[in-house]
Length: 234
Ligand SMILES: [Zn+2]
Image (cartoon, rainbow, N blue to C red; front, side):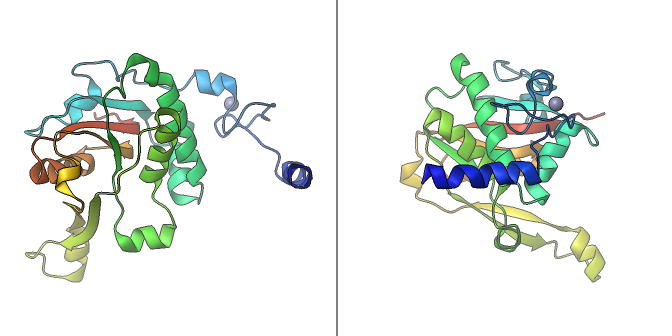
C-alpha cells in the first residue's frame, strides 16, 4: 500500500509544491504548514504559565477559570492569523489540528495539561457545522489530544438565538447570537477538570459562555481554557 501511495503524494507535490503558509518559501523535508524560521517567529503569548496573564484577564468574570493559555497573538492581516482563517473558511481543518498539536507539544512539559480529564471544543450550531463539514475548535482539540492522550468530550450544544425585542429582520439578524447549553451526563464531569478549546479568543464572550454552561450544570467541575489565537484589545 505504501508503494502505491507514495508516487501519488509526490505527484501532488509536483502539481502543488508545498510552501510555507507564512512566508511563501518552499518547505524542505520534515517541515509542514510553515518553515522552521516562521515557526520560531510565531508571536507567542507565553501565557500558559501565568497565574493571571492576558487570557485570564480577558476572561475575568464570576466563573472561576483555573488555567488559561493562547498560543499566539492574533492580528488581522497577520500571516499567522491567516492560518487560523484558512483553517476555518478554506476547508483546511488540518491546519487547526496542526496548530493544536504543536502548541500542546510546546506546553505539555510545563504541566499545563496535568490533571485535565477532558477536552471540550466550543461547538458550532448544527447548520454552521453542516455547511463547513467540520468544527475548527474540535480540530484544535484533536491535535491537543494526539499529544496529551486526553479524550475529547462533545458535551456542549450551540444554537442560534435572536433577541425578542428586535423588530425588523435586519435588527433580528444583528441581534442573533449563539447560545450554548450543556448537553451531556453531569455525573461524568462532576469534580473533573475540563479544558475548553477554541480557535480564537476575541472578546472572550464565546468561550466564557461555554464555561458558564458547564459551570451551571456542574459547579464542582474545574475549568481551564486554551485557544490558538487571542486578539489584542486596544
Ligand atoms: Zn516561512
